[in-house]
Image (cartoon, one colour):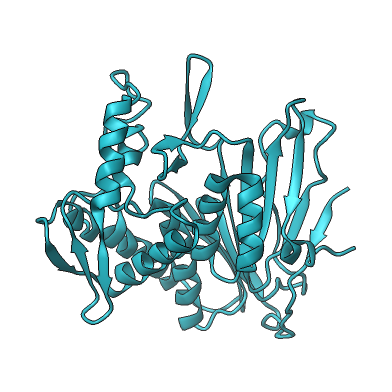
Length: 341
């Protein structure tokens, strides 16, 4: 039997009279995006396809570590000791990412791009290329030393960031979530108040469907869990004024000598995570926050992650692998308070 999560606050704003669902989709950030919205049947919305795509293209141009000519790419190559003026959106996302880094005790760090690249999860030297070999202890030690000494600083006046020399920003754990928020904001500027936005599996919803029902979404499950009896029942969420993001060790990884190496890197050790967490889901008003915090909590593990999520007032779900091959679930009190029981 499925369990149901309901938002704490529900708007009584109805969908447009006689409204119908309209769909838009495309590709960006190495993944797909989609938008479902409610509008009057005769309303002209063809311009939205271009407008939505343009929002995501702008994020890539500013924050992609895959594009050498992006603003982020230029920052990563900037001269040591130079202050770089950043576009407003890039500055805001970096500022938020650094706040999560601070509040998580470094479990998430937007300056850990060199470590991500070393482990083959960056734009070059990929783990899925024939010549790839995992980094040596010495290489990891050097990257950790550089990270500790990076000292990227930001100044709100002038929206500037200091490149101390060799710092490699990687905003991949927050950019998709920000992209979801950016599309939601764009729809609001276009007078659209009832929608479901998705970028690479991260989602945000507002309003209701034409039948008055909310946008129901299933929380992402760990692949293969349906083969085990000790698996909590699936959860569905009324995505009404909320966003949801999931981090999982099953998304990108490679195996070597019988060991799985996850794409989620612990900046504190320089190693891929090796705890028993299979996934962490965070429900939040902002998808950017849900995205970043799901990564940070995954790195921390079930015990420390749950404690920090409680202190931060986050609605989070942890799914951990057990020694018997089954799975256990842990929820924060804020998420548990959303259960319709």
